[in-house]
Image 1 (cartoon, rainbow, N blue to C red):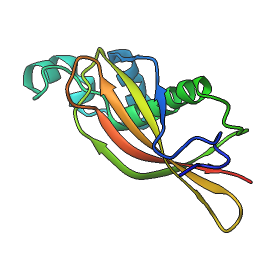
Image 2: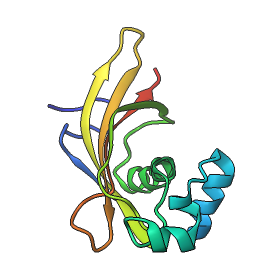
Image 3: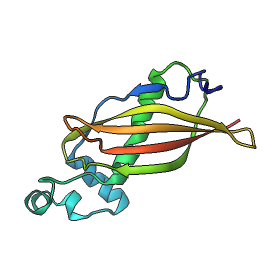
Image 4: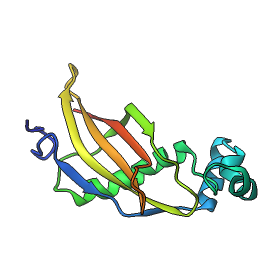
Length: 152
């Protein structure tokens, strides 16, 4: 099925893969400063290394979701022109945090065009299937169905 108005790309088309992003302790700490999510498993390096189940601090799930914007913009800009001025973040139908990301690990996103549906007001809703890979790991960090609102 063709996704008219999305560069003629077919639903199911891989849009590409972002560059690697290092999730370091400084990024995790800065995110905690912004959101207030200061759980020791994220921000107490000594305790997380000594007592935590992962042997190191791990990134907050909201930090991983926040990085999707950066990664998606790399992929869409690297994809053939899809004829959009902008798309609004419309939310998620599904988000799963499959595997934790330890401080210092690198992630990247794979995006696939999953759906494009018109709304009654003429706008369209695009669904991107997102898989966030952790370098050197068999399991992804995040899998999500991410929605974008394409205005008329």
